[in-house]
Image (cartoon, rainbow, N blue to C red; front, side, top):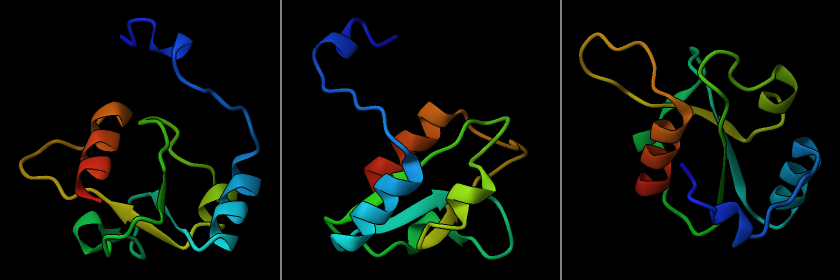
Length: 98
C-alpha cells in the first residue's frame, strides 16, 4: 500500500520510550492512544506544533511500559456500533485533527 514510499523517506529504528523522553525534553506533549477511564477524547487535545502521537495496533494496542511514559492518553470517539478502527484509519484521524 505504500507504493515504494519506504524507498523515498527516512525510516528510523529506535527505542520508543527513549525517543518519547527525548521529545518531552524538547517541549513536546506525547499522547498515547488507549481506551480506558483516564484517557480523554481526542477532540480535547490542545492543538500545538509540538505534539507526538504513539499508535498501537488494533489487537495488541500500546504496551503498558510505553503508555506509562506518555503525558496523556487519548481515544477516538465513535458513533454507531463499531468497536475499533485499524491503526491506519485511527492515525489519519489523529494527524488530521491535531
